[in-house]
Image 1 (tube, rainbow, N blue to C red):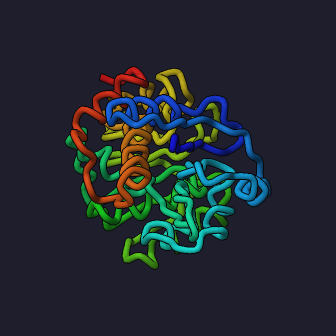
Image 2 (cartoon, rainbow, N blue to C red; image 1 turned 135 degrees about the horizontal axis):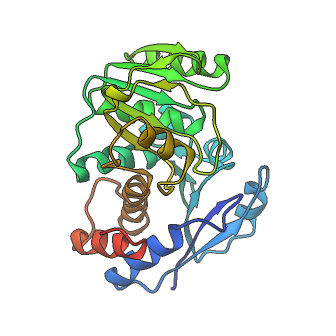
Length: 274
């Protein structure tokens, strides 16, 4: 049987997931079909009800990660901890996973970047929760949270504190301590208000959005004297997609694929990453 898969969300036309998954399944010799579907908030249940037995799994992006969490019968640890699901494995029971968390950890490992004990986090949305969990897994013990809404920053700081990370919510009008790692979770096309950045303190930037050097966050960083990011959102995207493929193919997020190095190379080439 030719298995079918897709990425769902809105907007979805920009998604690189079909390129990544298609390249991987070609290396693996699997005649699987992976597409994209525009599904807005509230549309997940109806879509799931329309699927036949040939469907193997789904990737979820915004605004469906919370709906997928509520819909899943079984959850992995990262999904339970973040309250967000970006992967559904279809079957008699609906299995929900969050591969963003290990995808972030993988991105840093692949680039040889060690976060250190302190990090600054810009933004407090759903992706930020995955970042908090990933940073904790990488040994970060202190986080400063900057967000447009003070209540959102406080909620995320509380979320981090519940996980044993010392966290402080700060105003966007503050001056940022960027001598270590700075993580932006803003969308690539957003024009966010950004805190002041001392030019002498530009350390390491991790921009979750896979945007180019002209994005507001990248310009802000460059103008303050920061160097080009060594790890970025495209690295995260590849890492999380690789773990989705592990689950779709072998049902185990931790079990490497056959010739996984070749699979990773093909995925990177598919999105123009050397």
